[in-house]
Every structure is written in C-alpha cells, then in structure tokens.
Length: 159
Image (cartoon, rainbow, N blue to C red; front, side, top):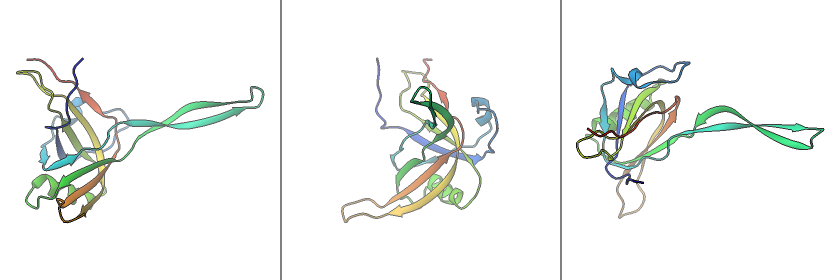
C-alpha cells in the first residue's frame, strides 16, 4: 500500500464547458487550455453524496432508505493572494459569470518517469472572496466551486 501527501498538488482552470446529460469522460477535456492556479493552501474535498429518500412501510414498521440524486459538496479552495497570478485572476473572472468551467487537479504521485493522478470536472465558481485574518497571517483568496459533473479519475501510471 502506498499513500501520498497532498503537498505538490496543482489546480488548473480551463474554459467554459457546458453541462451534459451523460457522464464526462477524459476526451471531453482534451481541447482545454489549462491555466494553473498558484499559491494553493487547501484544495478542500471532491466527490459525490447521494440524497436520502425515506419510505416508511406501515406493515413492516420500518423506514427504508433509498439513494436519490447525486450532488457534490462545494469544493472550498484556499489560496494565498497573488495579484499577478493568471489562475487566480481567472477564478475571480469566472465567479462573475453564470457558466461552468473545466477544472483539473493534478497530484504529486507519479511513479519514477511516469505520469501523476489527475481529476477532471466542471464547476461554477460560486464565490471568490478575500480573507485577511490576524497580523501574522497571509492574505487569502477563498473560492467555492460548485461541482456540476461527475469526477473523471485518471490514476498515476508507470512509464
């Protein structure tokens, strides 16, 4: 078993990418021009949760649980503010738009000479706000990504 640190992970924003009724596949992201979002401190969480549907049977006197629609919690991304960073500027611009954007996460888990794991998805940038905190803190840009698709997983691969 091998585990990896989050350190070294990268986040990228692409262009507008419309929702679709079928799950996304890797090829759906092949034409993207990616801009790295720098000074990441926290990538938050990424993944789906099914809504709970309850049904109580009178004869069984038992509540049964079913899985409903799937949705992802907002991905809370925290960055150290860098006014000159093109990725941060793209996030701020995307927050002002109504569209979904392509995103890519790249992990620092590549085997020697191989390629790293990646995650692809679309999301709306729901918020982009600054946090200043206390004197001995770095000013931060916080963004919430409303994930609106499945997450396409690409595992690390040996050469």
